[in-house]
Length: 292
Ligand code: NDP
Image (cartoon, rainbow, N blue to C red; front, top):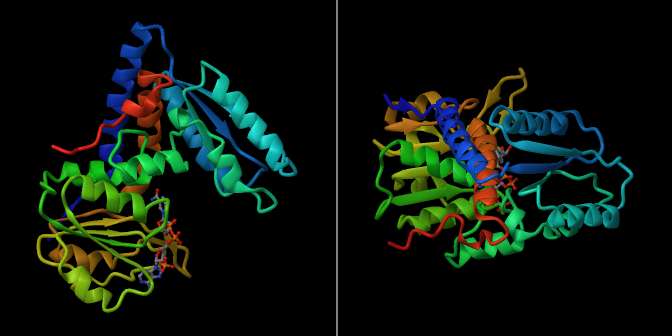
């Protein structure tokens, strides 16, 4: 029976580490600042932004909440982002997604200065990752890498299978695993015989958004299984993309849903904000690539 990879506990450790970095920054007269931009009043988005702002406050970081109305225009939001880009007390900018569909989400995200792109979603940040340069990485994949590291698994030479190819999770996590010298297979909705591909995996990352798509008997004995999916069943329960109980029978380590990848995402946002404050406007050096 596999061990539970407890995202809540690891996220607490990450927060404690960030807290120590905030203290060290204070000695240099720097207080990390995160600007949050929440457009409209979607209740779920409000909860997410609220937990990010609380996370900042708990560690002695500042947050600057911006709440443009739902009828704000794309150019108003781009102007707000540019203003935040120029502010020396703002080290990270978070635009809560999704934006109302009247807005050009991409134009707003791409306006974020790469040095302040703590969500790692700009083309510049993603390009830096693709080309093996340092830079701010997207929070969910960063959290996954930390969880894998906690298992003690040496990724070099392992076969990692990523199911899902979104820009938010699937593509960046595949690149980050590759950076750590795993042999990576990316799967998606057109992959033939997904079961056979997953059966060959030492590490499985499921980021699909389909309840229990990855069956327990697809998991190789001793594999590390990271379940990113969040799916609500008809009876209101939260389940992941992996058939948890059956997969746990075979896995060495497995993340639960909830309580696995989810708690890591906010913790890594706080870590990215501290990193952006440490590096200042030349964030290019953050998170140097693992070419060793
Ligand atoms: P997307 O919807 O953007 O991408 C889903 C991917 O799954 C696509 O690449 C799609 O393939 C692939 N897919 C769909 N059906 C199948 C199938 N039958 N077999 C194989 N692959 C398939 O999702 P995200 O990456 O944004 O999110 C994935 C999940 O992770 C969601 O449940 C989301 O809620 C959750 N999530 C959780 C986070 C957390 O903090 N815990 C953070 C972000 C996301 P194709 O490209 O061919 O269409």
